[in-house]
Length: 385
Image 1 (spheres, rainbow, N blue to C red):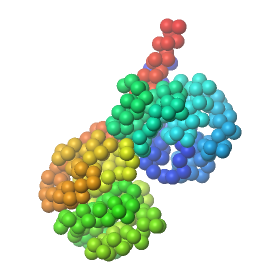
Image 2 (image 1 turned 45 degrees about the horizontal axis):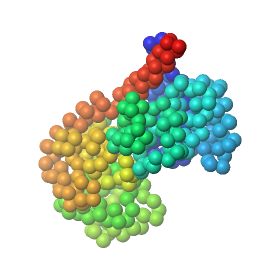
Image 3 (image 1 turned 180 degrees about the vertical axis):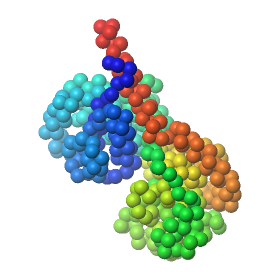
Image 4 (image 1 turned 120 degrees about the vertical axis):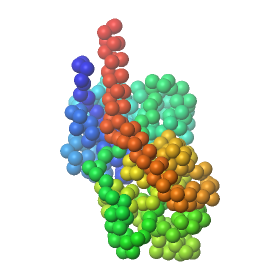
């Protein structure tokens, strides 16, 4: 093989939602194809990933990965691998990995990967050992805490597991903060001088949501802002959300992010700061939205856990609060809003870090280096045999 190798890569995913995992698979696939590599995605028919990948011109194959269908689908995916002869198969969850990695092993795929994006603590069961030790050459994670957990659990070497956060697909440009703020106020039918705070992540369950609202109320400056949630609330939470806001004197100040994903950059620029409350997962990854906020120069405050602490250096690129300490979150939010100069200095440093370390180009180069590492290892083995 030549030094400049072009790889055929197959991603598999059993997920039927549209979240950070699916965004990563799609953006990575688009980037790889732009570099001359060939990408195929195997996902459930008409899932968001399937549809969006097809719209981008990426080759897609439908597979449900449902338990009752796995006997028949194993033969189907094995045939796909035999026909396509990929260099890389990257599985993005246990449901697809159970049959995809086995099929990849049987068909001699040279580089087999399991990616764990986020989730709870795994157990050292036979089934998990088979996925993470026997069938995979490499394990990818998005956060250092997850890497340490899996490395210790399955006794993986440092050359078998890698932390690779999601990459930012860079925008062509960023709007001015004042323009973005005024446009957002207009979208919500509010006065042009309205100020906003963003809330990243899934809308918390009622108890956690009440704690978040109370933390905001503890900060006089935060209490005067309007809150913009990036995620839509589940129907069962909408009434409770409105009730809590009313009880705490925040009626009319709770909003959900408008527009499409492409509008997110204007939203980051419209915010005085972005909060990321404690995530539900035991081992949370690096939220793509947090990386995008850093790139956009938006001051950030996050829970000191998982992937959040990987990307935020306290008082250098943002602020970290102890999970569950609402008064600490309130204090930091008040400080960030009271001292805008310091907040903007941190945001400027964070933006440079994001531009240098967390773009799709940076992520793609890391992936190619690992593929090349595997390629060289195979070439040397063939040479000496």
